[in-house]
Amino acid sequence: MPELVFFSGTMDCGKSTLALQIEHNRSARGLAGMIFTRDDRAGEGKLSSRLGLVTDAVEVEDGQDLYAYLVDHLSQGGRADYVIADEAQFLGPEQIDQLARVVDDLDIDVYAFGITTDFRSKLFPGSQRLVELADRVEVLQVEALCWCGARATHNARTIGGEMVVEGAQVVVGDVDQSADEVGYEVLCRRHHRRRMTAASARAAALSPDVLPVSPS
Ligand SMILES: Nc1ncnc2c1ncn2[C@@H]1O[C@H](COP(=O)(O)OP(=O)(O)O)[C@@H](O)[C@H]1O
Ligand SMILES: Cc1cn([C@H]2C[C@H](O)[C@@H](COP(=O)(O)O)O2)c(=O)[nH]c1=O
Image (cartoon, rainbow, N blue to C red; front, side, top):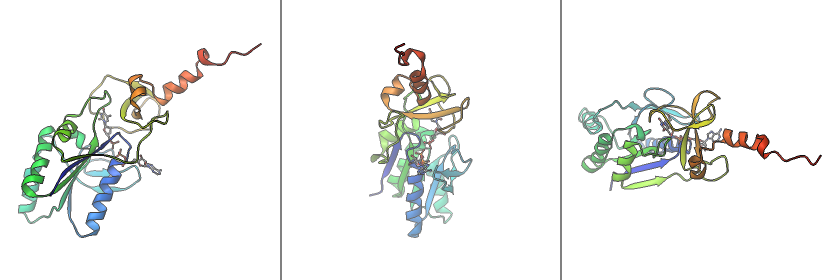
């Protein structure tokens, strides 16, 4: 039975790498995939991983009907044995419904990849719809780690290393940005709740308040 699978996790946990591996293994066996993405850091119409791999993809637009796009593609003689949708958190809820229809009405597997929650730990609308509709939600096995060593479960947005909680839900960016730039850092829940990033933890450790007092 074809499935709608949502591979979810924090930023930087290997989602795009897995998407590219699924694509590689299927295309190596002569299958043809339809690859959708939206706002990948590598630019328009690209699906990229931090391991350096990249492939061309269809850049999804606001309000684009993904089911109609597939039907159109197939009726013009194109092939689509499976569908990959990366950065699926940026898709609209109605586009997730269209992907579910691709599975049910066209009998095509759909593999969606995305982060579940934003920098305020609120669900992205597209991810919420995926959780509601997916046949399976898969958490990636290689865990991203918080600076404290615990499994990272949350995404923090940072400016100059400090966590911020105000701003637009969508700001394309990366982890390990240099100071002053808007960036992201993955944290465990405890440190996300305390707004404690690697930089603020380092600063706290160096603060005179916590330096050992010399005996003299
Ligand atoms: N230099 C490296 N050597 C080995 N693995 C790396 C390296 N750089 C990144 N990675 C791996 O790639 C993962 C990020 O992959 P990516 O597919 O870009 O993540 P996502 O799409 O989830 O944001 C990291 O968690 C890490 O496991
Ligand atoms: C938490 C959060 C992230 N984003 C953006 C930042 C990146 O461009 C993508 C996630 O990409 P990845 O391949 O999973 O690293 O999402 C955002 O716009 N808003 C947020 O709150």
